[in-house]
Length: 333
Image (spheres, rainbow, N blue to C red):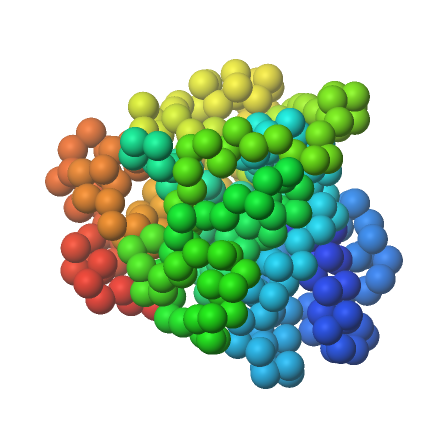
């Protein structure tokens, strides 16, 4: 399953790297694009384009944690319409809810989910299997940069976690986050006090928010009626823990006929069975490499009624069991 990124996501990264001293023409040539496409709402890019730019910057600038630096420089334009929505939200909790609701406007290259333990909330980021450590760092760091910039109280996380190796001085991370930062952890994410999510945002504006939400809903409706694969994927992921959706159910969710949905799949050279297989495989890899969840939990999140069914499916994909893969992940899967 290939995801797309909106033009403004790539444009924001190009603008940042230009400010860092890289030649803009070289950046554009590196991903085979131009200024006109970079500013066109009709032009989409791939996650690979984003990764190629991060990799070029890391090598050219000799900055291993370029994603961390980019995340620290968070601007609403990085997230397009969604960025302006979260800035106008009333609280951090509202901002997180809006992020989940409108994430597909940014492309479904990952998902955030929460776990509650007493008065502590763990906000986890489950990225695509192909996401680099730099990419993961920029997502989590941008979350923190947004909250630090737009809350009225100097509230810091309890701890920050990354599954990859440390790429720069630990002091740099802990100075920015204001808390312990752990690498080679079992997940990517942030632990915060539950009360932190109730913090008001200094940029809250209900009138502006109403306009932005109306615009966002309009864009979601367009994506539904166009049978966007991002929308289809998001819906499948949402309902899989409860049941495996059929073609008619997905069509009803999108507000189109089953025949229209089938034509969309034909245009994308796929079908529901293949898409479901791709979604389950990618999620399985992400859960196994980025979390410490038990296999029963993972199989449930993927919509398998039995753990043994998930294990057989995973072995069909990779020739190894999920547990064997977790202990020794293969880059060839």
